[in-house]
Picture 1 (cartoon, rainbow, N blue to C red):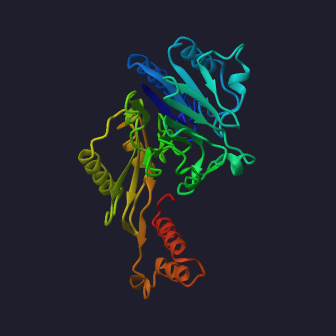
Picture 2: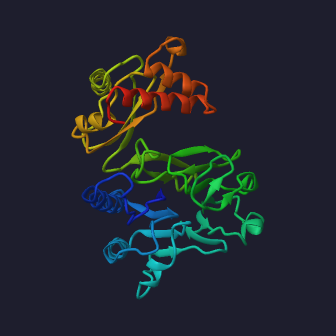
Picture 3: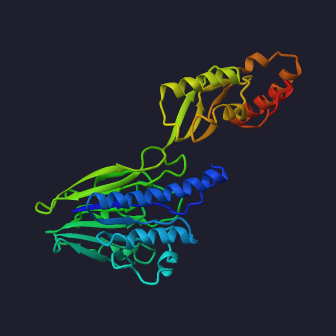
Length: 364
């Protein structure tokens, strides 16, 4: 029996934080198409269950087109059960718009709900955590030792923090509960670790990266359960339309924008990245305070290398204060004044850099 574990699809995400209006619309559609392609994969590979471990949608106001597309993929594939557990981004906006819930759309609630397959040999249990049921949730979970048990939750374990609000998952309270596979959602990277002597816990990650905190290959997990031995193999299936990368470039010692451009070009040539990718080029290293570096020029220079390019300056500044100690010029007087100020060292360096650029007639 084959099962897909996916989560954090965030359909209808606005995608406007970095992209142009046109690119944001295109990426929104690509994320929806990736979901459809996953369903097509399930149909072609005899998958019996698509388990959605939270955050199917991204916003309260889901567009009619996205709602209809999701509904159509469910209704047109009656041989596949869609098990949908709501996450912290989900609400009832999708379900409330349905005239009736399709028979193959199985839901969870704030109480443990279980679905059985293969005459009870495979059991999928899930619960939507909230502030009220967190204390009693673990003690009320009862699973048979003789079945292959999948448990699904959406939230963050104690080891992984998130900026988004979600319920906490206590892995220690889920040990020795006859769990074979703990299917989790909320963390957008693939993580698979031992839960106890019997089972594992797994964050499948998201189908598509949306920001540069979600770099690398994305997709879903395919479980293939041996119906006789009641054991399973798992594999991560990559399916994203585009991939996000961070490309660090050490520009230590460069003195001009042109020299920095050559270093970026070298990094691009030695780190092949598909041209349809989204790439953040991160400048690292230490620069002389009098270095002339135009991030605007570099951004324009490399803008057409990939689908989307973002440049970030993560360099530090080198200032040899001794060079200015006895300098009688306006520049020397300015540097000494900043050096004797109450600013911290990082701010002193940045103020001096901006001041020297201004005194040299450069735009800041």
